[in-house]
Image (cartoon, rainbow, N blue to C red; front, top):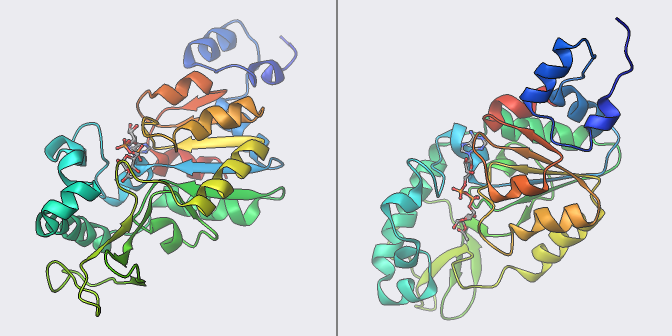
Length: 268
Ligand code: OAD
C-alpha cells in the first residue's frame, strides 16, 4: 500500500515508539525519529547543550540520579563559597578526588560525535556545556561555551590571579598562590553568578538556534536549564537525548531515550 510520508507532520510532535508502531502496523511509512533528526541536522543552525550525562560513559559520575555525586555529598556542604571559606581542606579533598577521576577519563563516542557534528555543520554550531571536566575540548570540540567553569582552572581567593593546573593529586593541600592566598577551583558554585560572557554567548546561540539539542542533563539547575525553554520560545526544534525523563521533556519536539554515546553517533 502506497501512502504519503508523514514525517513532516510528525516532526512537530514528540514521536513516541507507540505511534511509530501503530502507524507502521497500519501500513503508513514512518521515518524513524533518529533518521528525521539526522536529516534535519544537516542544514540547521545547531546548539548542543550538554550536562554530566554525556561524560557518564567516560566513567565521570553524574551529579544526580543513581550513583550521582550529590547522593553521597550534600552540595551545600562542598560546592559553595561559604563551605570553602569554613573548610577549604575538606572541599579541596573532594575536588582533588573528582580531578583524579576526570584526569583518567577519555572522551567517549558521544563527545566525539559532537566534535564531528561541529565540523560538518553547514549553518553553524555552538556547543554549550555545564560540565567542568574539559572532555569536549579533549575530544576536539572548538569554542566550547563553559557555563559552570573549568575544574583545571584555579583562582586565587586573595588576589584573583587565574591559572591552569592539571596536577593530580594537587599539592600542597589546599593549594596556595604565590601571594599567599588560597587557590580555589575555577568553577561556579551554588549561589554564584555565571560568567557573563559565556552566558551571553549561550543565550545568543539559544535564541538563534534552529535545532537545540539538550544532552545528558537533568535540566534542574538554573539559569543554565532555562536555555531549553528560551530556545523553544525562539522557535527552535528541541531534541532531548537522555535515558531518563527530565523537566526539559516538556519542550521537546523529539526525544531519543538512551545513552548519548550510543545515540549521538547515529545522528551523523
Ligand atoms: P545531573 O547529574 O543533574 O544529570 C545528569 C543527567 O544525565 C540525568 O538526567 C541522567 O538521566 C542523564 N544521563 C545519565 N547517563 C547518561 C548517558 N549515558 N547519556 C545521556 N544522559 C545520561 O547533571 P547536570 O544536569 O549536568 O553544577 O547538572 C547540572 C549542574 O548541577 C552541574 O553542572 C553542576 C551540578 O550542580 C555546578 O557544578 C555549578
